[in-house]
Amino acid sequence: MTRLSGMPDAPESRAATIASLKDEKMARKERIEKQSWKPGNVLSPLPVVLVSCGGTEKWKPNIITIAWTGSVCSDPPMLSISVRPERYSYEIIKTTGEFVVNVPSLQQAKTTDWCGMVSGRNVDKFAESGLTPAPPLKVQCPIILECPINIECRVRQSLPLGTHTLFLAEVVAVQVSSALLDARGKFRLDKAGLLAYGLGQYFALGPVIGRFGFSVRKRKRKNRSG
Amino acid sequence: MTRLSGMPDAPESRAATIASLKDEKMARKERIEKQSWKPGNVLSPLPVVLVSCGGTEKWKPNIITIAWTGSVCSDPPMLSISVRPERYSYEIIKTTGEFVVNVPSLQQAKTTDWCGMVSGRNVDKFAESGLTPAPPLKVQCPIILECPINIECRVRQSLPLGTHTLFLAEVVAVQVSSALLDARGKFRLDKAGLLAYGLGQYFALGPVIGRFGFSVRKRKRKNRSG
Image (cartoon, rainbow over all chains, first blue to last red; front, side, top):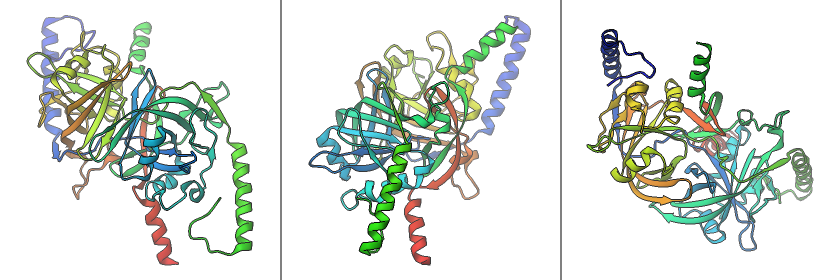
C-alpha cells in the first residue's frame, strides 16, 4: 500500500491519489530495466587510503594502498582493512598488530595509485614517493604528514576470508591537518579534496549536498512556517 | 634517505639535489601542522547505502540506511555491513541471513537520509518513501528498483564488536540499471550520480580523475617517448 505520511484521510480523493501514484510507479518501474552481473565487488564509492605500517626495529616503515576498508563500529571506534596475505605489508601488520590509515587528498592521487602498484619488498615507498613520515601519537609506525587525516589503529582480530584477510582494528588516535580548520575551529572535510574509488576508477569528492538528518530537519522547518 | 626512482648516479650533483630536496621537505614539514582528536570514526569518504531486508512470511520488507559498510574480500566476493542490535533490521538480517545493498544516487539522497531517521517498527519505508521493491535474483528480500546498483548478500558470519555487530556477507548476485550502460555496454559509474558520506555530511561524487594503475601507465608512456 502506498501511503504518504501526513496525508489527511479523505477516502475518495485519497483512493484516486493512490491509484494515480500506483500508475506512476508502474510506469517508472517499466522504464527502469536491470542487467544481471556475476557476483563481484561493485560496492561504490569506497574510500581509498594509504596505510602505513612498520617502523619497528625489524620492519622499516612501509605504505600500502587499500580500498577494501571501512568503519565497522562506533564505540569502541573501529575500522577494518582487508589485505592479501601475499602482500609485504600483511606480515608487518600481522606481527606488529598496528597500522595507520592515512586519508590522501587529490595532491596525493598519483602517489596513492603508485603505492598500490609497487611492493615494499623492492622499494622504499616513503623515500621514493616523497611522502613524509611524521610522529604517531600511540602506535609505532609513522603517519603520513601530507595526508589530511591520520587514523592510528591497533588490530583486535584478524579473519582470513579468502583472497583477503580482514583486520578489525580499534582507532587509538586521530590527527588532522590544522590547515583544514576554519576560523571557528571546525574541520572542513569539504575543503580536503578527498578521493574515492569505484570499479577501477578514482573519483574526486564533489560538493556537500546535505547534513545527516537533513530530510527530517527540512520537514520540521516546513511545519513551523505552515 | 630521499631517493627518486630512475635518477642517475652522479655523486656530487646528486648530493646537492638530495640536500635541496631535504630542505624542501623540511620546509613543507614545518608548514603542515597537525591537531590531535580523540579516537573516533573519521574515515572518509564512506559509501552510504540503502540496505533492504525481510520479504519473508514473518518479516515484511524493510530498508535501513548504512554508511558502516565496505568491500572485504575479492574472492569470494564479500562485503560487510555493521548494524546496531537495537535496530529493527538487525533482527531481520540476523534471522533471515540475507540482505541487499542498494547503492543510491543523488535522486534518492533525501530518501536515503530519511530511511536512516525512522524505524521500520513504526513505518513501512517502501510504501512511504515511494521506493519500488523489485525482484531479487538469489535472495528473498526485494531490491530497490531506483538504485543503480543492487548487491544481493548472504551472511556468512556475524561478529558483535561493541555498539555494532559486523555482518560479513558473500555477494551472491548483482544487478545494475541498464540505463547506465553506454553504447559499448560499459557501465558508466561516473554517470550514476552516486553519494558519499563523511563526518556527518553527504557529498556528491565528483569527476573521474584516473584509472587504477594510471601512475604506472603514465610513467611508461613517458619512457617510450623519451
